[in-house]
Image 1: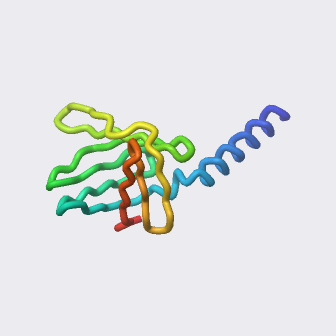
Image 2: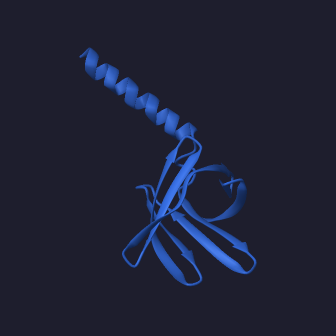
Image 3: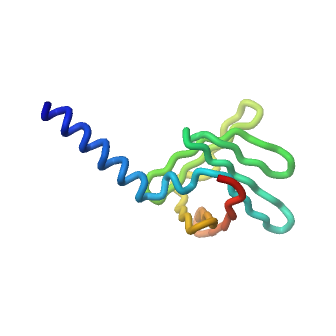
Amino acid sequence: MKKVLSLVLVVLMLSAVLVSCGGNDIIGTWEAEEEGLTVQFKFEEDGKGSMSTMGVSMDMTWSVDGDKLTASASFMGETEEMFKDAEFKVDGDTLTITVEGEAQEFTRVED
């Protein structure tokens, strides 16, 4: 019984940590435009999603570890890491992803 109670407590604590780290805040569709080019990310709850630009959509996998975001895209059978351990922050309807010191802001377009 003690082991079950301990396991339940650990799961509850991990759930609280994940929620407080903002992992669930990123779920939804985000869009940015720069120099006439629109980029859209769709983050789904299962760690999957898509990335679209210039009329081309690619399947994506993603994960969050604290305030770090890692994402890879697949296109025509090839998988490429887009960014690893990029800093990210969700503030209302604004998602900021910082890769190698360069910050890009995205606006939530869908939940």
